[in-house]
Length: 385
Image (cartoon, rainbow, N blue to C red; front, top):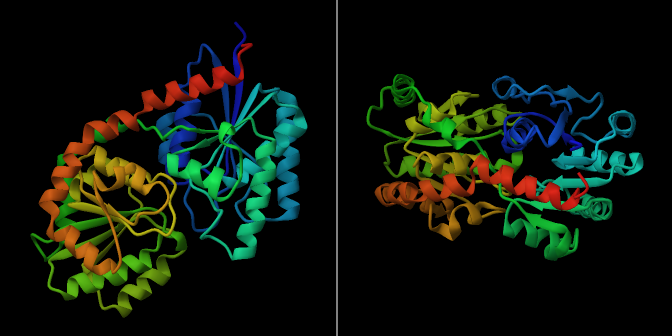
């Protein structure tokens, strides 16, 4: 039987859910049926490549020159030419793109190269909230054009499909299929109890017994860590013994550190930086919170619930789907400081919710389910192989 040649393309392998998906699918799709290549673009300044993940997965990665997040006619055309040549040489049966820039250049190159099957996954979207209204409108027109060159578009949740089909009219409903994210969640069971204790001791500092509220992600504007800091300052002012642990890094960090200083938060905020041992990090936290303006399907919430850690998040993007409309965690409301305080005061109930969610989350967002769903989709579009 001829193997199906799959070329997978992602804008950048930074710390986040898309990188996990691209690496896992490239490595674990049935090697007797699929021959896979993974191509990736370049990370922007201030954003780290997930080298530890790449090494752990053991997946060979080819990096595309000039494929960068920021628009540039010169660089984008060079990247498009590189991808077109690569596809003409390798002759993939199927090109599967992840994230916006890779999705645009990859699908266009695949169409020009005559690749039979073209698939794109929306890991969240930049159709609103990231840019000015006119630029958001322009990106919607571009995505609608690219959808015509695409055989299937993968949405990560029903709400995201609704956005793509009804709200923004990117593609017709029969072209969009919902396939939730999937991860090796069993890896979260491999944690170091001594490291957990060390994290808690370090992060609590002199405030022994304080709750540890964690935020995990990239420090970029859409994540609205500034909003979290302001709400947290009011929670602390109300007398709650809680520390905010910010796990991650990004271009917004200097501004956020300045804001925390203005709010006189001092050592109540812990700047933990990038942490690769996420299993131990989650076990060290009492709860996890997200206050983003937009999300696809937030990996942080999935991993926290898979460990039985209580979560709260603003009800944006795929968050309500992950939390089952509030069944598994709190959907934060305005005023944010009051909602956050209520979450922390009701932590025993939130812990029961998270523990009840564990088996559901591990099944719905497990790697086995994802691999089965993707294999089924590929087979439906490439039936001759």
